[in-house]
Length: 365
Image 1 (cartoon, helix red, strand yellow):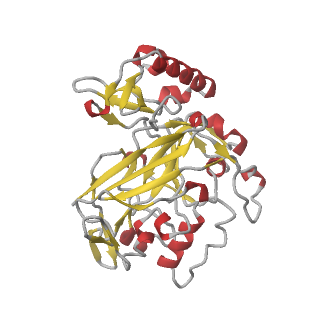
Image 2 (tube, one colour):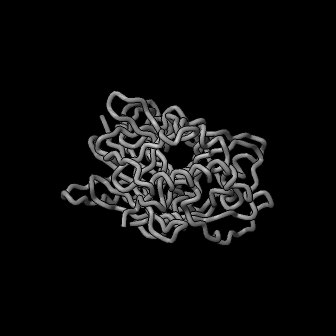
Image 3 (cartoon, rainbow, N blue to C red):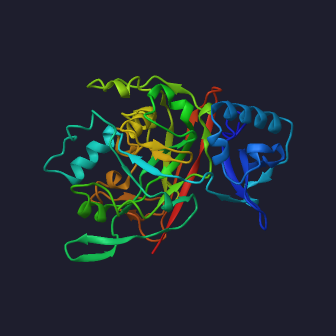
């Protein structure tokens, strides 16, 4: 059974040579053109549908299922180009894996390796750049920056961060965790590329800046929230403040990271400490607004084991324990020409395994 069957139908935007972009859904290894359905489905981006709200999302999904079931024409994915599925309004990235936070503290702050005191009290995040969010397959140019006092040049410790992104459909401010599903349209996989040497030099006291802003890759597919199966969130200690309760749904998403076709890690999203509902509530708790097309990412997904981490900083312990790839070569960090693919699966709302798409990038000098 395909992971992209009738139980999934993630949305995307595709183009055929000489034609304008249009909405489609993935079905197996094909895409189904939704333009014959008209209305919000006959568009060149998901934003109008996302802005229409949950009732229209449900109606659109019902129409799409009926359309696909009736035997609508399929176009092989090999015959199309996939674009960004939505126009990215703003981009925010969180830091919500306890395992990742502990590893990073141990690697970058060995003099104070414990979690920051406030980490368990609020979902930590930073605002990124929407202008450098690119669709899967876009080559990633190695960034340059300050690497230390008096040193400027190409990044030498280029890294990935395997994450899950949440796409806002209906805007708002001071959004309650209970209202998460009224605002978030779906999920997409994210690779938040990171220049670790630039980061190590610049991040104190204000955190990531140029080490993160050069590129963030996203999957060309957005899986509707309705296709996912939520579960109870883990217990949190100390108990969060009222605006972060209840925690909202957790999702048992299973990621996979391939480095030059070698699978090197399998990060478990179920291990995340802060939920997507809590992240959205915190993001808007001060009165800040979100709008249609806002993307916020979970932060690096890392489990307890070394082969469950979502960054190469952790996988190779800052390059001191290189990983061996299937071609016999070894890597500490990314080299020019390297390709990284992050994919994911989960048991969806219909009780069958569905795919979350994939996000790929190749490093250019």
